[in-house]
Length: 60
Image (tube, rainbow, N blue to C red; front, side, top):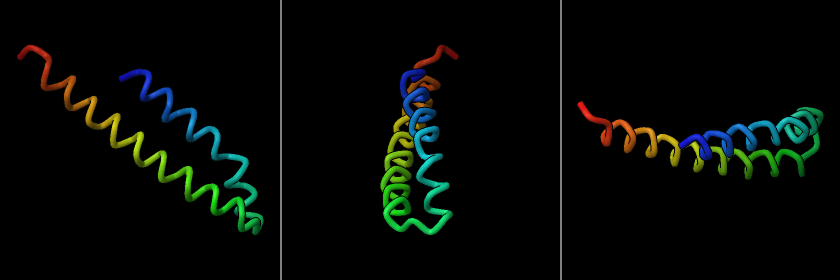
């Protein structure tokens, strides 16, 4: 679970340069940001599932 969280943090951190470029009008950077955000979405969903699995496996 922690590995997935670190992966998510790294993905978010890697977006910064392209977000700034996209905000400046760079269309290619905007395309990269959208692609990376889709990956953020997928990793976030994966983390969500792992958290639920961990919760369900914990003793009551």
